[in-house]
Length: 301
Image (cartoon, rainbow, N blue to C red; front, side, top):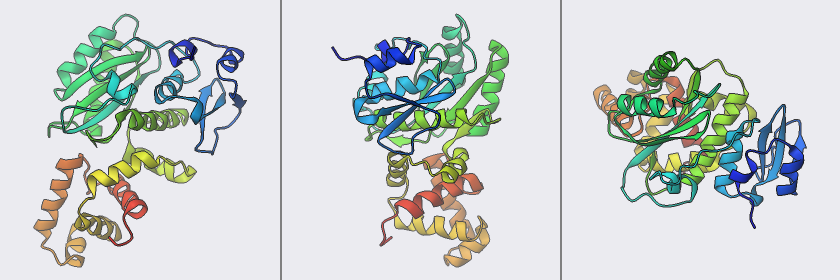
């Protein structure tokens, strides 16, 4: 009988984990080998060959964050098979995942907390707790989605109402044609990595976390490649990003170098923001786009 992540998560002993996953090894640092999954376990890391784990098991093990708490059964949720079983999305559109990690559980108030989120975020199409101290929110892009700073303020208020403290990771929007199980696995690992840094930021997104990813050489190839494919189908956008970066985000200088009227450039920037929820006038967002262009653009672009 195959051992599932749900069976492994409540186990606290590494010996027991070793019995379920014979190839598991305990190390003091994370693995640099992309074929090895590094799972936080106390002050150390469990190394597991990625081939030994299903996508669902990878996500659930990472959710343990060393405490190995049991997951909550959410099989009835509409997005559960999409996020954990590679099922397709039937309604075309763009979607993003918001991960919430509590420093401690909110006791028996999970249902009330979910109701508050549903009222505050009208773009939510599914939400549920994954463990007693972590939740997942699925949003569809409608044009009314909040930006990182707005979400940060909202969750500060929620923490005060529920007498708790939470960290938030706001994922980018992905087109419905992609495999969200694979995307969630990488976004979950990225969030876990940022939490391990003990950052003083309450809320993070990919643009905010990118500087750390560059410094330690961590690769999230599927996630980045998917974003490039979704956002930069037009070569004109690639040249626009390169020119904006070269001119340090200055719109007037960029318009001049592109032989474009400044108002036309601003229109294109606003159009890109409506598509991605990124503001190219902000250097973190511009850096993310420049990183994607430099690493994934076709040589002939």
